[in-house]
Length: 162
Image (cartoon, rainbow, N blue to C red; front, side, top):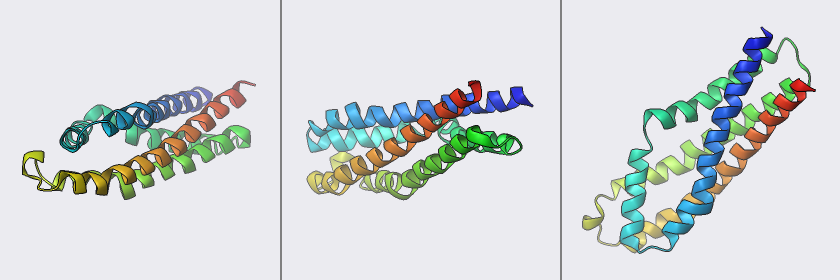
């Protein structure tokens, strides 16, 4: 049982770290880079990214993180202690990441996609204005909650080794 707890916690830490890195990369490179582009490039690029990110690798990490964290919590219920506390905190924080994504970022992505091909959007500046600042703000929020979840899982791993 100890090995299963360790594997679940290690896997949860790995995929949560991958997701934290993805959101962080958007915060510090992708969105600042796109901010310097014209409206057509911005809207078209974000539409393509939003379509391409919905793939098996992304979904496995994005949803796998919450499943592995929850599994780690369940497996640590019988032993309690600090590892359970760190892991439960990570679960709450990662659920906040999921909720932010589903409540804010996904609907913004869907709205951008619904605007249609960039060649057919009459007012690209208005479409961009309704999307960019809000998406960036909510991405930063989910970056923070995800990085904190990752830090909690590192804390759980370190506590378990002490």
